[in-house]
Length: 402
Image 1 (cartoon, rainbow, N blue to C red):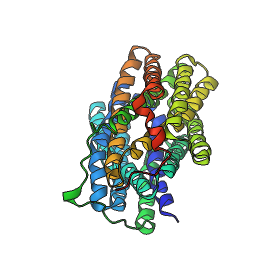
Image 2: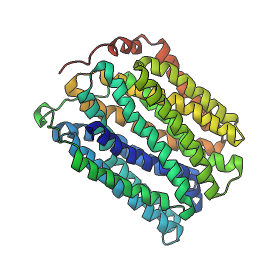
Image 3: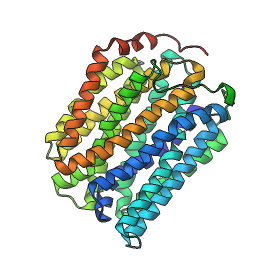
């Protein structure tokens, strides 16, 4: 088995675990007697620790090699998710009061978020180590395909296992990364560290080569995560669904989104080697159109159409953003830039759920109006900014040498 596919398998189990929670969150929060904003805080806790931890793991991947960091991330994700599922079970049985359950859920998610940061960081750095400029976008799209597959399998797993209980999918999501960790331990070769402590690259978020891309990635994820976290509430409220029905119906919608995402990343990006700037210029307007449908959709077909269009657009835009940032730096800085780009997404995932759930309590349409506005601003910047257009030339030549 090729090393890249071992890494993809590890990423897949983590993204599948994240995908499992998306359709479960809204009914679980309401069954526990928590508010929408508390649901957003549960997601925000993990995202905050993920964002803070990603640069840390980027540096460790340079010092220790990619494999040890990947293993730590997979095992840490399994530990955190297992604790989360157990806390939720105790809360549903009223062995924990709602406030106590909320605190334990936040802590468990925070633990999972910090430790899992090593998975995408080490995976992205590995691809950047082994690809040149023209091939890098395609390699990163393969990592994005693991995301897409995970968000197909996760909601499908959630919908399929929900009949055995609301928490059955969470326990499954905690076990599967252990299988991936065993595969990584046995089949992924150890890569030597690329830097010792004295020579570790010190790449700052304010570096003029990358800060515009970090802002682009942050803004995209703010909108995306806000929609994902509030979608369960929206489906339950607009369609009048029970908790079990919400998990199953939203699971179907998220599966179709994942398929659209996968079509973009495997069927378009890898097949046609589309440059990063083009991916952003096409993908962002598509995402805006998809989320605009969500504002007015009141039937299941329209809601699913919204998710498909948005999934296709984001499936193009996110690999474009990630590839653009890696092409701006030298080979010995790839671990550092992987940490920063992953961290920017983590900060977006921290901001988006809390902001969106707070807005949802004011009026259900507000989170989606905000998402459309943010993505439209980013799309305008990508089309008009001379600074961002530089990447078009970079994407057609080899990556910078060490």
